[in-house]
Image 1 (tube, rainbow, N blue to C red):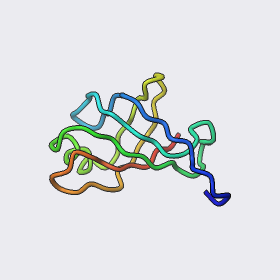
Image 2: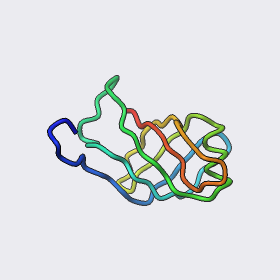
Image 3: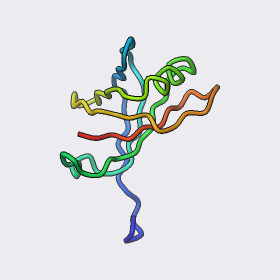
Length: 93
């Protein structure tokens, strides 16, 4: 952050979905979810799952992530390293 503070982090277990898949993942989102606004800047995050699911999610490009509190967000995949169990995304309303 510009003021030197560490941004809030949201972690938990949620449900990742994309075309042809719906299943549980662990996630971490950096930034304040309360600050998300329609059409505003996206937050970045990651999810941890199996290597196969992370690879397929990246290839699908877009999906949804339902958080532990039940709120669902649209995500766009932005990164994945072949062989990794972690996928990186941008989260928007």
